[in-house]
Image (cartoon, rainbow, N blue to C red; front, top):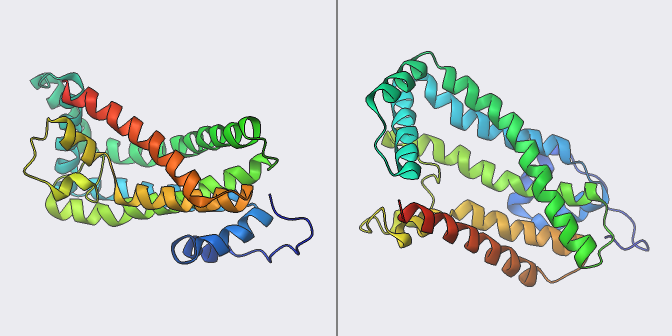
Length: 243
């Protein structure tokens, strides 16, 4: 919560706030906390993700790469090869570009829902458990503005994956790419693949935002978020390596 005795910083425009998340997050968050406006930046993040994930599917190369990625993910989670009939249905559907449109629409539907859930969790932790007094709109603004980092990672990763002809849920900037010699079914390979450089960056930025909002140490907040993130990634890696 901002100090009531200090004059509120002047509000920034949408573009300035988006750039500020990359160049000077603490100074930008000082303005965001004083003037919380979560909707516009959330739309920008969703738009970046929607364009990056759907546009490649309108090309033959991108369509086939996305189809192969979807099949690999299904087989990885089920532990079974995809039946030929199911593959044929998915291939026919992909040729209509239905998946591209569905991807774009689903991003705009799921992104706000996930963002609200995450912001709600942070609000409960900081306000209910730790005695903070910030408004939910301020907490939501921290989450939405931080999301521009991961959205940027998705946008930058899309052309790289397109050129490689292979898409993955974790993108090209995960730590698993540094050790390609690992068995892709091993726990370590799946764990490293789940750690994304832009998500790590985003966690640091999120921690800065909450340190501004709740006047707590950035390092402590970042450490707590990283622990939760690591546990989730480890759980998913353990599940995938067991298939």
